[in-house]
Length: 283
Image (tube, rainbow, N blue to C red; front, side, top):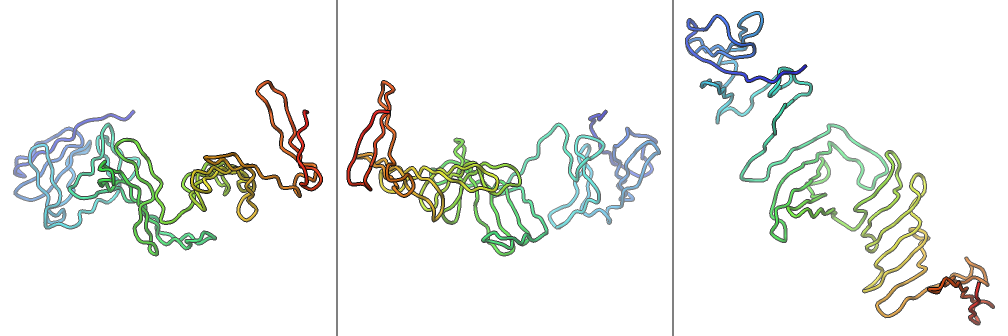
């Protein structure tokens, strides 16, 4: 069972150091400049003021470092609010606050290189930052995700504003949101801004997306099958009309379009004789 308790700090002359203190409490000797911590076996010297730069004790507060100290090293793990840390920094029953007059963030860096078939490879020492609050274009505060590495300068990849609006930010047109199974390259759907704004869908896994709905032109919505160079537009909805194209080679000379009326009657719109005529037949 983990217990939460308050660590207290005391100071005074070395000769006035008490015989006991609650486990975990500190005592700073002002004449010998030694910091002690008390546990079950007694007082343990942590170090002198010369070894712990800029240390001062004031009642229940210990300050380590000052304006002239650039680095304060903590070896091991840091536990705040509990006796044992299970990570390098472990905080119990509390929050972590990053505050500043400028942009502040959590920064995560991996010291490695990813070399693969990606167009931006290699990725050398990738770094992500989370935070960096700024004023957005509409005046609302924006919380941002940033990326950079040894080859790529700092760029914004995601933004979230105070109204809950989330934006995928790219340096060029391309995929913005996808849904896929872990480890698989191809998504079930992709919200893509290249070559036009579109929603692409497919089976995922080893197969690419094979149908899409796109804004192909001004006030024009297109329905497409296939992808890439094999993409084919099969229907176009415009502000003035609905246009449908039939590929005679794909559906055959007697290929056609199935139409349904409100009462459920179905009709086949056929283009026989290689497109020389048009017929409608109830089916």
